[in-house]
Amino acid sequence: MNLPPSDPNGVTRRGFFQLTLGWVAGSFAATATVAAAVRFLVPNVLFEPGQRFKAGKPDDYPDGSITFLEDERVYLVRKGNTFRCLSAVCTHLGCTVNRAGKGYHCPCHGSVFNDEGGVESGPAPRALTWYLVALSKDNRLLVDKGQNVSADKYLVI
Amino acid sequence: MNAPLPKRLWLWLAQTRVGRSVFRVGLPQSNLERSQAMVSSFLLHVQPAKVSRHALRASYTLGLGLISLYLFFILCGTGVLLMFYYVPSTAQAYDVMKDLQFVVSAGLVVRNMHRWAAHLMVLFVMLHMCRVFYTGAYKRPREFNWVIGVGLFLITLGLSFTGYLLPWDQLAFWAITVGTNIAGYAPIVGPKLKYLLLGGNVVGQDALTRFYALHVIVLPAIAGLMISVHLFRVRKDGGLSRPGEADDTSVESIPLAQLPTNKSYGLMELARGTTPQVGKNPDDEVFSWPHLVFRELLLFLLVIAVVLFLAIFWNAPLEEFANPIHPPNPAKAPWYFLGLQELVSYSAFWGGVVVPALLVTMLGVLPYIDRGRAGVGRWFARERTVANTIFTVCLIVAIVLTIIGTMFRGPNWGWVEPWGPPPAITEGH
Image 1 (cartoon, chains in turn orange, yellow):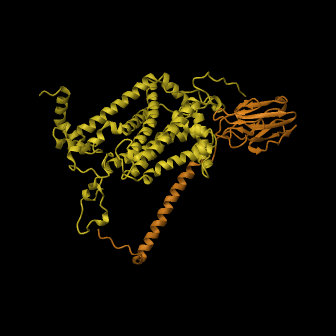
Image 2 (cartoon, chains in turn brown, yellow):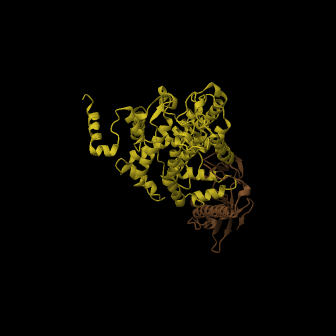
Image 3 (cartoon, rainbow over the protein chains, first blue to last red):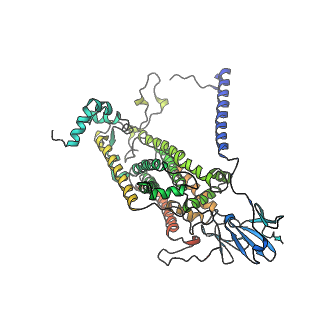
């Protein structure tokens, strides 16, 4: 039980270097291991559906229609000769919103959105997202779910 | 010999050359052998040779911790069986569930046992926590074991959560969608955490693979390790809490620095003061064999019987095949998350992140704040009225929220009365 006294003035040069080396090596090994393990778990390549898709010819959508595109979970909104695309993914926790009256209802936690996607009531923190709509060279509607736009941005044909 | 045949057979087996090599001590006949039976057996040595009578009183512990442990055993056993058929693939997982139901012999019973044992484990871990609170058993020197217990509670919830993605039905898909989106609300790390959990941006094959790995190895391994530490600490902290423990001056620990340095010490002398002291209070302790061991065995059989009974008469729910386009309406989590879901329906950040984090933190620091040692070892001790009242209020709020989420919420999470007419769903796309 007779340990040497822990006097700071009693630190030897050899002891100091041993301690420093130990701490540096130990912290480096620990950091590198954790960092590599976490980084390993972050995928570099995703095999997920693309963000851009073609939504058919403009004339497939009658004037004044709001069409749900199942596979993409979006609503295509046509008014006159303007086109917009609204995300059907609730901004609260990711459920698919349903058309209800003039707006949209989320079945999971009861958020209600108006026809412009704005939050009327419920726990949703943000309005539904509008996506960029363009026209492709072969005259098809082209939606990019990677690009959000404001509600007043239209594609005019 | 008048002993019954099984006992005679056992005695004969135990004294044969092979029997002695296996059991070391035969069926104990004396107090010495009763102690030896406990310390020389691998399976029994985890437990002390003698336990206090108080610890054996079913009305004190209600056996809740032990029941949780047995449910964990059942879950490991049935879980390994299920792994022989299960394929963690979005295309095949659901078909395997159907195979278990219609093709595999006893497949339905094994899956049912796994599901009901999981529900029961969540329930009994919660009840165990309530028991420990209401008897003040988290106080010195058991503070850290309470913290480990809080960790085990979270691991239990994590195991259920990762488990119910695996059937890849509607509940699975939408529960994980909602759950990982809640994780996304966590400050700073939220979106990264969600990406890491899902292995991408959408709930798909990568998410299933990850949740599978978490469910079958990562979380069970952590749970197993923590359960071991939990049980180890129960013994090292002096067995189960009991009344009068705090007034007992003979169990005060001796600071190491006060020990003279001119002599060497045996482990007994350095051990903590709250270690059970053999012979200190002989009338209060009984031999673990047979008093503890047989009670435990009986409880184990009872737990298996109940789970088997549930599994034979009630089938584990399986919803429709996962449909990433339409959530069921209403989309409800299992009962133990419905209180949380009700909170989340007000605000995802406050209800899904802040309130749970606050609750867990409060539970974790509780034994370091509530330090008085009066009333330990008794249910609802009057000295603990304040603490018990606060805990009970929190508990009632949680139960009320769960009941609202379970019974009073219908389509679009709207308010319904369970005794009223079934609400009509009028909307579509």
